[in-house]
Length: 105
Image: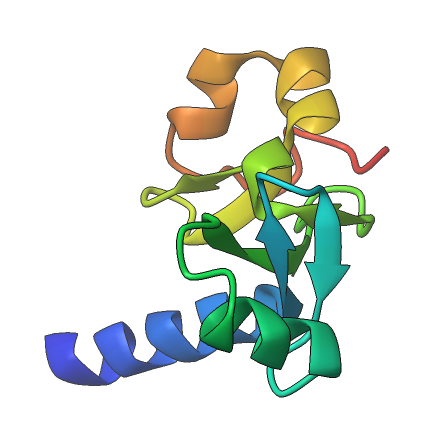
C-alpha cells in the first residue's frame, strides 16, 4: 500500500514541473536543450557554467515560478513559491496538510 502512495506522490510532483531551460551564468543567456545557443555552449564554450532551471507551478497560488524561487515540502508533497511561504509562515508550510485551515491566495 505504501508503494502505491509513493508512486502517486511522485506523479503529483511531476505535474508541478511545467518545463525546463538552461541558463549560462557567465554570459547570462537563456536557451533550451538542442537550441543553437545551447549547441554553441556545448562545443565552444565548455568553461561556461550552464545551469538547468525548472519552471514549477506553486501548489498554493498556482503561479509559475523558477525552481530557485520555490521550495518543496515533503510533508505536503508540494512545491510552493516564496511569496506563499512568506504569507502563511515557514512552520505552517512544513507542517502536515490540514484540509481547510489555509485558504488559497
